[in-house]
Image (cartoon, rainbow, N blue to C red):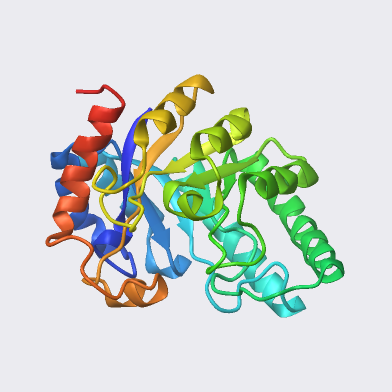
Length: 283
């Protein structure tokens, strides 16, 4: 199991020049970095891979940023835009030796409304239809698509482990797995540990976030049963800190971060990693 950090804590958008962050991440003790690619043209994947190798840091995951126009349940144009975007991320992941493209790979974030049951079924079928060819492409490239349920305020499409497993089953590909996040689960799951156990072998990526989207371990979440559940299912993927602060204005607005969660954003990374290592019994 490796511990990683999502670069949104420090920069948006991540560009090739952002690799200057890598040395500090490694110095703090992180094994991997998670790179949100807001637009594929923002990075040169060969140069980013080279910088990560030099820092001794693995690129553990690429985070799909499902912004406006990228929607597998939207218009025909939006579906095409989303498909081209995700396919390009798969290519970039393969170039960087990155095993996973993660996130809400189904719909634009922020689309949340009351949807009739018949329309829900139609949208679900659209997402499955769009994911199937991407899953086949990911299989060929040796990349896994990790689908993340979000909380009800960020999407009306996929909120729980149960719904995530239903989608994975419908797509029917070994290249499509589940991605869980303690922040979203804290809102949507009745029992986080039970949800992790239910995900079982389908869980391939994990975000460790505080209940307030701050420092993991500096919150009210009971981390002991979560760690025990991950051990019980023999989880071998990355555990990544994905937290946001008001320092990065664009992401703060998108994630509804209206106040300082911690006095210093470095505390989220440094203290968060220290807490996770303590929870998992790692030095």
